[in-house]
Length: 457
Image (tube, rainbow, N blue to C red):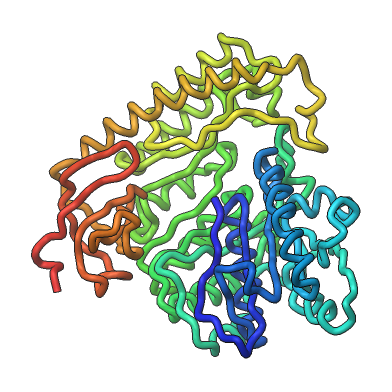
């Protein structure tokens, strides 16, 4: 996923272009930087050729994203040659992973910043403009994981209908394939009052739905003093803010507690959708991954949460081709998918990542086998998702309208509480509102709907 931020531009002000690779955590960090720079008089542009500052926020979870960075930097070198005063910044997980090696390989990069340096970045940018210095910095801790609430609240910008709020960073699990603990560090939770304050500010700016973010979001609060349970934070958000929808991602099955599952039954603003990565179905592979559960453990968690909320939509992450994975291991993964019947899956091929235990495991699964397995898995899940979407036909769903649909033709787009995308015709004045929509057709990845008469303006 990548997003280029768009606001009105002005030739009197410095312009920033932001390009984000990877996860919603990176999207959040990029948005923090943009909104902080707005306070200093910056504007944004969608054209790197117009920018005074170019920020590339990187992801290293999979090798493909890293290669995309190198390709983009190659293209930006020509721009830097033509406009040497442009400040070019590389941040995020690849920056944290490679550190000074980035400026050695790409000497035209002005700033390399680690995952904990976003809050320092505006001052570093100013220093580069003033001194034409090169900045390479990787703080051990970040002074703030959120926005500057008082200043940001006074600026003239509107929030998106759906906004993301990071409640913690880092991970203590050390799954054998995962680079996150090495580039994001150990778990660090934000104080709950700071999170509540940010959500209130975003709500005042127009946000209707909040998505709580963390590498292992349901372990939130364990390292606070005194500790705070994630379920307690959800309860506070429900009682102390006026947002109408709440979601969170990403969860670890071992931290899906009874009190958290009960929130899906008891808290009305918590959407009935849970993203619960399982990664593999084979107990042998799960053990090698250091996931801390078995296939049966995972199935029991699913059964338990469905006892609290029978209609809950479940999505997950899964990989194929982990080192030593045999055909029988892969069949166990397919078996788990068939048992659970996920609403959707994010599926991908395993790739070695630096610093991880799995990178030294062998034998490796060959690329052809990984491609075949991924295609078979995706075909199975596509059939399940399509069947579930077809079952929506004829129902009436509450849709939070997020904006205009990419399909055009005067259509709007939004999501049901179960996180299904719905496209339908309607006036733009409905953006940001919840409306009743009759589902008329179910497709492989979305739904088509018809606005109910009582919603038409």
